[in-house]
Length: 369
Length: 149
Image 1: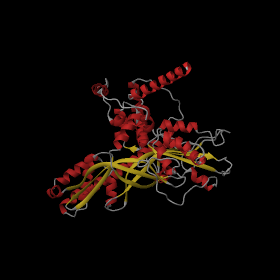
Image 2: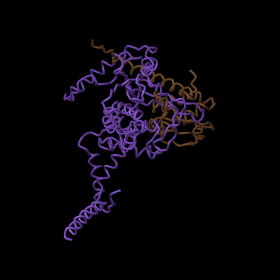
Image 3: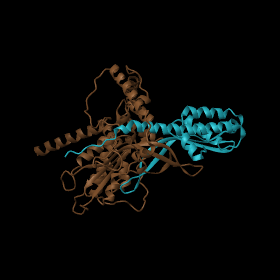
Image 4: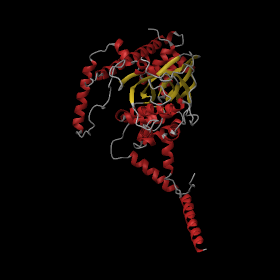
């Protein structure tokens, strides 16, 4: 580590901290409640929970408010808080097939099993900054609320909805068509817990999936973008099989009855990325698929994760992609190291200057001899 | 409708917090309940690591941790236990008391036991309606894109 501690300056440090708190708590505008942050900035809240690896909306909202909107700082606060909490239990295994969708699209296939459900998205409309007045915004909000009430007057059909809300995967259809490499395992290895032991390459797939599901979104997207060059060095086909947002049940064992009980639903985003196999040793008449899933609604992250999952599998340790994923995509690790650069490095830098001067003197002495 | 203990735990985990606390207050107004109450595990917030089986290799992995609060009590020597997602300690303590109350055979408690059951039924109804409303809102976004010739 290239820096030495400094001491003193306590009064200035306290004054700086007080300034942060005073300006934050006394900003010249209305106070913002956690409810407002959850309701108005849901994607920021979801992102912070996903990158912290901790599901709790209100705490994430409080962290965002305390961090004044700096999401990586909010993740830091939430992870710190998490480290003070005891682990009650590992949940019972939830099968991802239990996902009840509120959005589900299959970009690869026009008629997949189940619906193409756009859900809450602006993917197909223009991205324009809305500069309407507050009054106009409130009027539109009222209009849209009344339209939603009109929809609610038409009850849905539970039997068909059940199939639509838990649709079969395109993956199953492709398996039935014998177009998919079958990588289903017959054994059932215990998952790797990255919160107890840091994952290092070569890592199990469960360690990679856990690491990516709490990785920093921008970092994961960047890794994906760097790695869309395939093993043969050409840009390879990237096709998404499933993009889903929905609810997964959380179950634990009841300590008195010994039975599993569902204690809530957790929203997740889930993606399957279909890979066109074209390597010499690969089954070129079949596809393979990568998997991504993260807490909350964060499609960019889940898409990047799914592509990187299959990229890691195909790479099989030949390049540094796994090392890069495991060691450089955690937001707390990278931003923590970056932030420390702002601390006093006087001693380090003075020694660097002394070395420069020593080199210069040595060079001068050498020339004069 | 007979509600099993497991179902009661599930429904009290998502029941309206004010209703849970109000019923727990009523339960505590019975002297033999409040006098025999022992909080064996005070309300505590902790983590449940969520374990998911993914569809590609059918492997288990840890998705992330979920904050939850749990409590355990003894009322009249009957154990009560509750857990809820989040950090609401008062409500989870109330739910644990109600869980224990429902396990006690005592004629004075039949009214509040029915009230707890009614709260559970109402919670299930609200959850079901909420899911239907949500689906009604999103189902108009089902699309059939056409392919260009």
